[in-house]
Image (cartoon, rainbow, N blue to C red; front, top):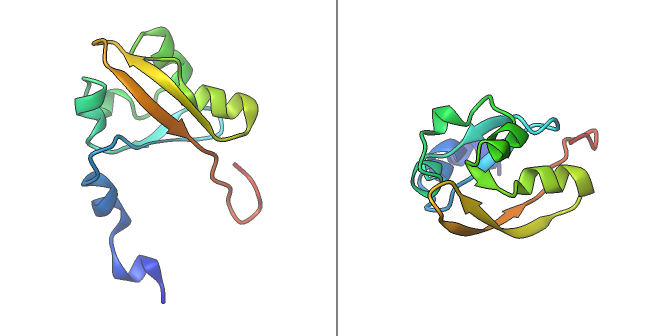
Length: 102
């Protein structure tokens, strides 16, 4: 059974209440679901293409769980504060491709 043929993963992720952010190995955001707009008080278009380090400096969120994951190469959980003062429990993890590359 092929999971991809059964469901559109992006439609599923878009309808999850939690925010989901995917970044590349340099920390540049390549995907964000619509929930980030509620949790981070910004349009997802304001995140995609930007470095998490830059967004952290701008105060969109602090600290960056992606930055911590990239530094340690391990799953991380931490309390992150948003620009509007929300405090979020965030979890970051590394996903490797078939060649064991991040």
